[in-house]
Image 1: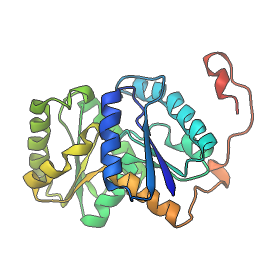
Image 2: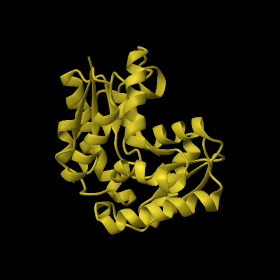
Image 3: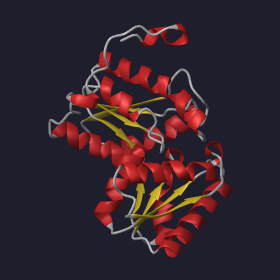
Image 4: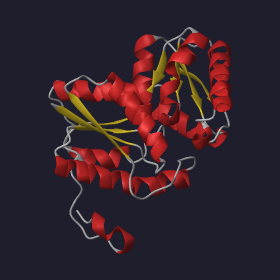
Length: 242
């Protein structure tokens, strides 16, 4: 039995529930998927400030998962907040949904487009494409300028789907990456509108995490991802003393 903990780094519980449905839909019958939001953090992540303040909550959930015997983790925000730090804490694999989605896209075509939420997040998506080695494969990042918590509205969903079709045509892409965990259940509709493979990072990361566990692979504890050195933390961070 494999236990995967999917962490939505924001505190919007309706979004967490939707992410959980998408993750469980692709998980194997023998895999338990637990989906959580931290008890502290922003209600949505749409800036560097939001992302920085989401990380302590993510790390608290990873630390709790280690006590619970969780086998692998998925960080369900397209900025992959706290990914490196989470890998230092966890014994099992930790995957970010941007990382997983971009990997999957390059297995399905020569180039991909990303459709995301606000324009201010476009630079972060490009940063991650460069970090993960996919800058040449990423042919464009397109913002819908729809806030994360508005993605549930039918009009917002329709606007995102239209933008996805436009992005594929404009970029000449072979695949499309949905650039927000709040778009996790858009895949079928976007695929019909674009006729290309559409990758939701939540689903991709869940399946990749399962595969790594099945292969007996864990994050390397040598070098950068070794457990953090013990030290005292003060003030609001005193509970994070390692």
